[in-house]
Length: 269
Image (cartoon, rainbow, N blue to C red; front, side, top):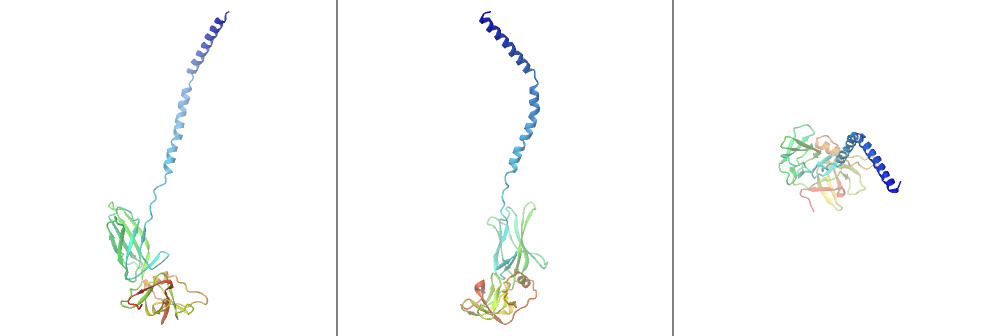
């Protein structure tokens, strides 16, 4: 047999074997197996977009608050200066309300008092009010919307004392109670405390920011030996606003401006 016939016969034999293998492959149910697996692969992929969507942080809303001037504050209780006209501002108030109403709810359960209404939030939300004497109430602000919804903001409790005497030189403690001394000397005896919200008549002004006052409006104080007075203001401020009985001092005494006092009326230079 010559080499040409050998190569020809081998080529025919290889072609027959290849055609048989191709035919056998085409008759296998491989496609059925792939179709069954595809739904499982698809269900696993759908969890990815869900996790991505929930990982987006929500928008941050600025906290709302009521801001107003005061002479002292402690643990959510604020003393205001009777007779002073101040502005209550609702910072970061909700937008789009028909009106913003500011009210006082007295602690003695008397009917609420409307301080003012702001119907235009384009320049901020605020009302002005002249502080009367002997206020003890919760300050509230409410936003009323066109759809009937409302948002309420509860602020701290506010207090006020007596109105300042007319035409009389007097002073009031601005930020915290001040000690009343027997003499204009820090080593002298402390016999009383003058709390915010009450005015004391000034009888004399001495060098070193010393003021001699009528001490009858101050609270009597008997200090234990070696212990300085507790100048917490809330209890006494509340008592004065609610007309509770205190223990008034007597005579006159001296206070210093180191803790802050406010002079009112016609005072000598």
